[in-house]
Length: 272
Length: 314
Image 1: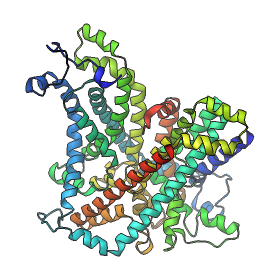
Image 2 (image 1 turned 45 degrees about the vertical axis):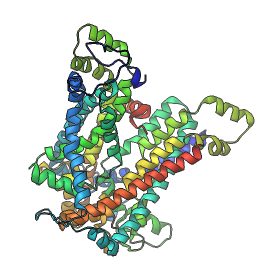
Image 3 (image 1 turned 90 degrees about the horizontal axis):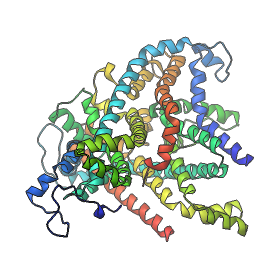
């Protein structure tokens, strides 16, 4: 048993080592970086964080807006659709459902170029956040629909029967009964969706032009090339401080919801 | 509850005993809420997914460049692909990357899941699970840049470790021969939280009786793992394998951010070629054709993975 714990501990340390390195570098000044790179001694230069915060903060705000709204939209659409697939039997329900789940297998690079043309030329959404929300909601809701459908199928019919006798309309039943029951699952999937959107790099790079409107992923890319390797002014401490700040938001979100999130993940958020 | 047994939503019960959906306009209108609920989803899917996919499939056979109207040119794009050395290098790299990642992902996920399964204890188990899931919350870009630094020949951690062990310092991503392997190595130890949790829930699904009778029969740990645990979590392993393959066959983030196709195009992958040709050089027809090839490869790979699992299953 001790062997198991030691092995797990070793794996955990190796997994986190690059990030620990990042934090230790973020507290160094340039001279410390070049001369005593691997030591952890003070003096620790916290002003690196102040300097990079000014640059990184707008990107974090943008990412928060983009990803949380994306998760919200995807959740709403997915709840509606999953409810319909789960509880109603209507002509075409199998067809539409199969259409939805085969999307998963299609590589997103296949339609990357036509999607760009569609979004920028035909829909004229270039340089707006809707250009990001459109495709990412579309692909994000697929997973949610699959999971939520099986969840709604597991709800017993009696609740809905009694609600129908009481005179509830279909929409009412969805909003007041089904959705509150599925909230834990929806929150877990929403968090996963937020994480996916947060990590999107290529698409925002393509459709957003204003530097101030960029999400964090692209922002860090530009930030790194302005203060890091290849820049005219090498400020390693600030670069790593910027990376550290960029890692914080989602990690914080995860820490706050981890019990929920782990239960949701294990129970069925990742189905076959 | 099987879908067939649920009552149809109807205000007026059918006059006959059999409940068959009638494909008349009146019946469809009575069920309009079913369709209304899925309308937003289907609309978004159509505009941002189905239409671009169809557009890509069609334009793969044209010389589209985004501005002039596309002209049908048959399979010229595919012939051009066949003759392009970049494309062959890209395909080679794609296989190296995806199979390498597949092995790393499977081994670490199943290994850590087995260890966590042995632990059993609730609180420590959950603590470790949180620890292993946390890294997915760190943006990919940051991990990529950290590893770019690790791979820096002058300042990086990689060469520091190698030289302290007495080995020769490497060029890592600057090395035309091994850059791709270093890209596969990136992310060591490749722990993917959700993957671990998936395998762990699979292990928990194995009924205790099997383990108890195995313990009574006196099998040691390795035998139990090989003969009982692994075969019984084949479904979960299959899911993880498919997810891993689908993801790694497409990604070109590393190439964009770290190597731009590598020292003299040795780390390029089809995804990067699509981006470069389609967006930078406006060869959109060609890019769509490459996309179609990737699509076919993914379909074949997924089909193979589904089969392999099934054979071991029975």
